[in-house]
Image (cartoon, rainbow, N blue to C red; front, side, top):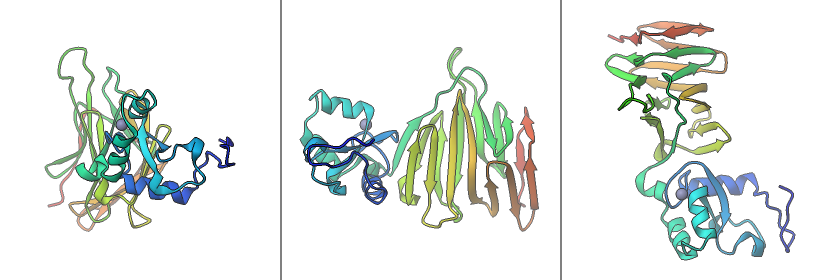
Length: 248
Ligand SMILES: [Zn+2]
């Protein structure tokens, strides 16, 4: 940061421009959809750019950017991908979790839950859970499903890989180990810390499933519904048995 090109243009891309680029690219690499990205000036390159024009900037992951830098891929390929981005075509962007050989777990605020099998379930639907390794020595597999206030799926984690539902997302940022999703409603926020080794921390969550609202911040986790009332959890640990809610 602070670096400027020969026209005095700073490398820093203004927040409004960056937000427009994210939305136009579908929150992932325009070629492969991976959610860990950089902003790349494609036409012209940053060295020759007079301004940060959103339409001339693409999201590219490190691997795809490397292919451009090494001239394995043409600029035309990136231009075409920017015009018809992977995430807009497929409806999702994606990324992988670093999972160790231990059983993964999820923190809801400062509550920690782990189990082999379902961790948190509403009626017959497992919202958070794990699966055993597919073969000895392979990692455990974390699964999770997230929704917004209107019960639309926003993101899911399947076998340690997350997929963001581009259609239900107004903005998405992957900053360091944190994933931040905003819905159109300012209350629709999901913030995850990827703590490594199959551990994710839900730092903020507000979603509804089967009439049950689940909310979390960095300290508390609560659920509430008309039939179940409200329960708040702080500093709780749930191990070795699933937490199941029945709404009927
Ligand atoms: Zn890529």
